[in-house]
Length: 199
Image 1: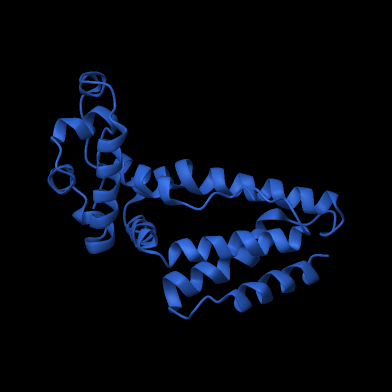
Image 2 (image 1 turned 135 degrees about the vertical axis):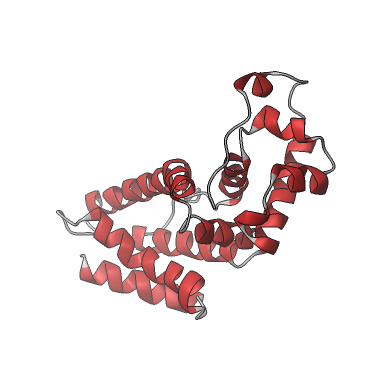
């Protein structure tokens, strides 16, 4: 399964101003289709029919179904930023991971895991997912890790990629691969072990 050609650029510039209500209907329809049948079920025709809009409306905002699916998933991802900014960085990482797994366990999370699965067999989709979602989020978590290092909670010279993989890897492995439950207690153990190992 590959990403189809985008609509002509002129198509994206025509039409009435965006309707936020129509946009939300389209993203909701995309999420439903992703959860029900994976990325292969997300066609512009199917989304338009499910959302009750014209297909040209979709093409005004997104050049192809991959861009639409990525927009849908990006809109549903848990923000990285910890607005409370309270407690230790160890506690802040725990809160962020717990918020992530709550999202992945929700109906919206089914769309996210479906897209993660689809990108394994579609290199172009995988690259777009990396550029638009994975790398920006990774950059934010690296920043939080750097702050933890500056605060003395993590040792100087810690490899950020190894540390982040150590705490996020078990979460995604259980959710996407093994199917074992990801509980708050499990997340606490992961983060505590990482902070002990890298302190």
